[in-house]
Image 1: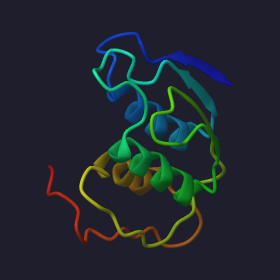
Image 2: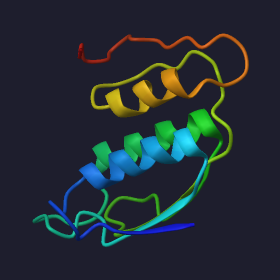
Image 3: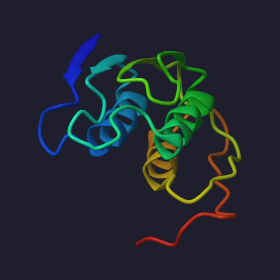
Length: 118
């Protein structure tokens, strides 16, 4: 399991989003400590939890610490499952990972409610 320190770098949510995407692509679990330690409101906020929940849904992942305000998260992905997933704003990273990671069967993604990004 990869051990990551969320206090490094900008100390915000980028390390979480990147870790989720790479975990889905590689299948490797991670443990992120000090989530958003550099912010006025440290820990997971609702928008971060949505990313964790979406990534967990498409990979049937096991999570620990996926609660509001948590500064410690463990994410253990399973194989990415092909399918149609409805997204909400802020889910670009997870959608992009899902579309490039493959999986069994047709790989479709729903863009309903998703922001338009290049």
